[in-house]
Image (cartoon, rainbow, N blue to C red):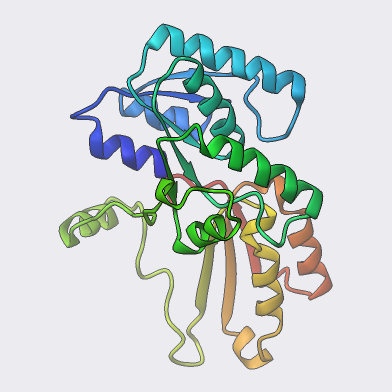
Length: 257
């Protein structure tokens, strides 16, 4: 969604081509926007030296063919491979760090690999965009990143006028009356969390907090999760442990959210 909003905001002024590892929500939306994209099959989140080398070759081949004037990389793996490929063709590259792989909560061995990989690739960047000031300061505190390279630009959301919201509601895309605030004995407070099921998102922590609520409050509330089902095994186990199966619902992927 971050990338899509950038494209929507600038497509009148620039031509875009997006390189991504697989088809799905992103490519569906790019098709609607009439934005070019290419699939790089070897580009995956997990570390795999053979596939990573193949992905690097596929990215450099795409760069040679497309001849871009600017390369904008997102996420750790694509950020490293994309900047290496950009450097080989002397094309300026910008990297948006959507959180660092050397966060203190990550296992030490993985943290050290991520830290030195990011620090080396930082020198290949024209600019590094941090989505929070916390992340910018974390990078500065390592003493391995030139502070002049780092800039904080917070994530945004598209603006909608009251008229647009009312129009969407009439079309039935969402119903503002479905989540009623707690005000009397019959009202239910609906709590929704949106995000993929992965460790940094901490859906498990929200379930534990919900379980800790006083019974009188818990009886008047429901918890909903919207996001990919593939990583929610631990969360469902917690619902069993805390006997919350009648209070927690897993909605899966929801588009448009």
